[in-house]
Length: 474
Image (cartoon, rainbow, N blue to C red; front, side, top):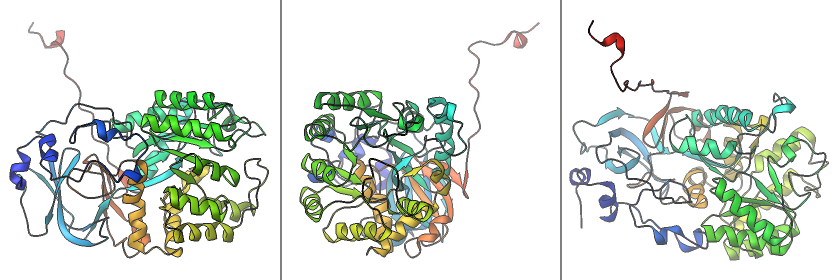
């Protein structure tokens, strides 16, 4: 069945997707958790747009049509950029048209982006937007209300810089869950937030070690001992709203196995902040990805490649630590020597082994103030390590979306995907620093940033249920 664009506009979205005009709903089997919820939900069904895949009511067929006309459209699959127009209905992309075409409804809102670069929104795979920073008084550091306010500020900075999705890998109490909910509803100016909520680790593990302080307490990380306790912690974070599970060393083999098994049953991916012997244990347990450039053996790297375990190297945040302090000191979860050369050599080994790597920054505390500098530096590490500039952009968008378990909805400009789009006044496929020139940011098809500043639509007051006494005739 072949549809013209005009007839596609007459169909509800579900019918459009079933007609085959969108990309396949299911990514390659090795890219998804053990239990893929796509197998149980009909193509075209609207969900909550997270890996949790909770069905939601479809968007009305009468949604606004917006056209980004005449830009240079970047294809994150082929890495080509060609003149064209992107047609959006509601929160979805419905077509990418040749530059000469005007095949869209007469009442469409047309935005001329001639001479500009159109690409999917950036994704940061490792952030901590609610963590305290140097200005946070100690008595509110473990308070989720203060965490929400910090998160709102930090998420605004991400959005203004062209990020339409972030993966928040733990924060204070319920703050990350609530920010994720409000962002999903487009009720706040923020990227999508895919959150882990709390880190799960063994007693005294990463982010719980002494000296005890608010950010190393139970508001941020859960210390659990025993396989069943780890399984229960996964279930609790899922209940709270987690769309990814984060674990950290130290742990025993049965603990990491229980966490991965339970998360995969729920359809969620699991990532690990772990090092040395714990990385091997996590890979053996079927973990989906490993964070950071923490040391591991060549045999573990080979096993990561064989098991298709991904990596999020976060080189720049550790370079910041080395530049500021000369190394990582005083932590029982960092009992190894860290150097810039060793970190980069690990990156090169993983690339040579064919390990899929996503782009993340580990922005935490004051590092949020470095947005987007820290992310651009991370992309430059990828280029230094052998990626071309277009391949680095691909990792920042398409690859990151796949690692989130959201490759069918994010990471590309294709019919059926969510309209998370950037318009850049430059050529970031040639020069990464061009990403600083953000002209427009759309999330869910809604304009959220213009010329680097958040666009806040005016409040439209609801009518009173009855006429007020003052309006009644005398």
